[in-house]
Length: 353
Image (cartoon, rainbow, N blue to C red; front, side):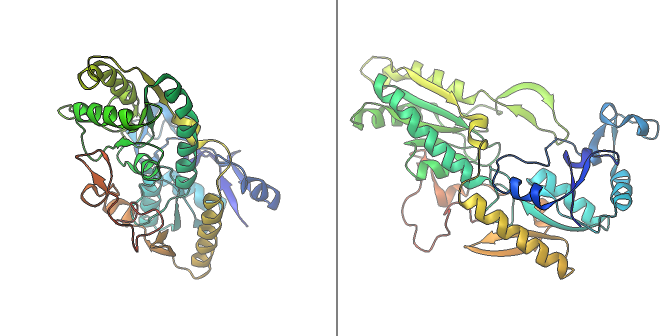
């Protein structure tokens, strides 16, 4: 049988697992979000305050590794094969369990599309689709008032969620985490774009992890750090909007250009999946089952050059998946490189690993 473990590795043995039924799977297959729910729990790096009360006496340290408890729970539940689904944080712990002797088949799922070893992660297409739709909807506001349109999108270390919608025509410029950007250059480019546009507006997509040149770090909402060492990002879109407004007179005959500033945030990751994100998960799940039946474990399901495959799960921690700036990002114009797409994979700029 199939068992779902709810709220990631935070599950205990009392009420946090459910035996999957056909009705649950049918409903989940056409619904957005994750019916498994989600947490930022890292069992190998768990603060004492987050440890279940019945285990706190056994793990008194400030930070604790509860992997042995996870292994006990998997044995108690009779889990023969674990199929972790998520981004590089979730899958890196899946690799840890594989090293501990658990039979693991992993599936990449993150809208940032930054899991190494695969061109595509579940959620990315829906994210790009939503971003394009919302950018086009907000154009009416920017055009009506002849303003800059600044849209902040997800993307901590990888800029795929800004680069691909820009390539698809949603924006004039984009700034991504892989290369610090010059705000003066961005203002000049945006002003030129606005002057050329019949409705006198221009659009930039800003990855949340983007940084301005000569600035040391990303912008964060606070100092709180999750169990994977990540602070919550936020604020670069606001800073870009303010700087564009302040610098715009220099490129607009002394007149200031106002800004429509919007953080898209969770709007791009809500709702039902698009067509590709309905097809790919079905294929990934099918391949995962094939691997299980063939006793072929320690694998990450992947898509490469349009073909479904699998790669060793070690690739998840062996490298980082980022935009190849030299191949795909024109730093002098703050936009994708459009020279040729001949024989490139479907998403063009996500296939380098």
